[in-house]
Length: 225
Length: 225
DNA sequence: ATTTAAAATGAATGATTGTTCATTTAGTTT
DNA sequence: AAACTAAATGAACAATCATTCATTTTAAAT
Image (tube, rainbow over all chains, first blue to last red; front, top):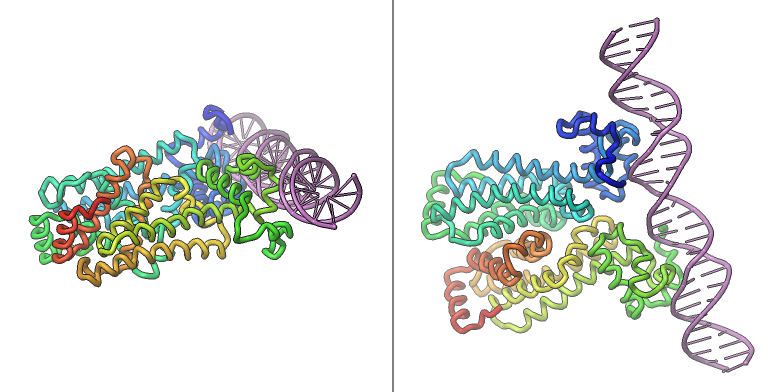
């Protein structure tokens, strides 16, 4: 509860980067409980129980309950950082790469909607250094999308706009599926939501050249989503 | 902390709908503290202090700390519900009404960004009946925007799309200014953000007829925003 | 087997804080 | 000014939990 250097000696032994099985189990349990019941409403005892261990043991693998929160949040962000580039790599065409990025992003959101919200709900309660770490990760994933957009602009497929702001708009709408799922999921399936979002972006962004190119892609059947 | 009927007798006296000055002060203090420091991190003592009263008095005006949270959240939602129609009423043209709605929405968000986030952060911890109340309010404001969109479609200015989902997209991007202000405000002013968002929507939605009409409006100088 | 070290336990601690209520203060009526 | 009511106080209560640590269990090494 005080300075960072006073980490329980045992904590360090457990390895701070190559996460042991145990540690992972604690993080997984915490992620689920925080997602479903909230951070403050979850007790360390519950986390330990769900991970099949005793409350005291948690502190051999993690300094704080807060650290579990950080790891829960970064865990989700890391899966964006992994899945989005993977999807982008499958394509060469700029428009297809952009579509794939957004589509992959929404897929991850839809896969763990509640965990996606952890960042929105709880980033604010973490100490600044941790917040920085989260922001950094968020910016990194955003950069991937920005790069896709830039490529589309360079190819004269997209109108010239503020790339970074646009990437935030895209990410926001992707997160929207989780943020407003209570309503949206009654109106739509994820697929439809995603396609609709993509259509809105493309209709708003494509140049005349881009439109022609996009139509070609559709006719080739390249746009499967 | 138990059943709802066990409200402190004194609470009822204070009047549950015509909010006394005191009550309002407590709500205002709570809103500010919850917004800045978080719900769980704020003590009733702090709220009382900020409102110039003692902790015990809070319970003469409010059943719970939770009720203060509900009132803080609904307070923001009510101001959407008030400001957005007010802005819409100023115009007759469908496109201008839509623009005005979105623009007003963003203005409210920008005016109290942190309070806007309360709903996102804390709706989940409230008991279901309160959550329902919040959802209801959100849907009502959304309906106003939906109506604007429907009017645009009826006039053949907008392409035909799923109206309600589109209204959620609009609202999400409006909230986006608060959700991502830490980054967006470095890239943009609110005005620019708003205009950019509106441009994206219009570019994506306008029909040929709509485009012509919109151009006319611009030339008349009707689109001031 | 014996020693040493690591992993794990879970009862006890200490601090926090929402809420209550006996009591005081201020205001109004008669 | 006495009696009565409402408003307000703030110390005390009760419950909750994150965290610690003396102790036990398990595993490895000699």
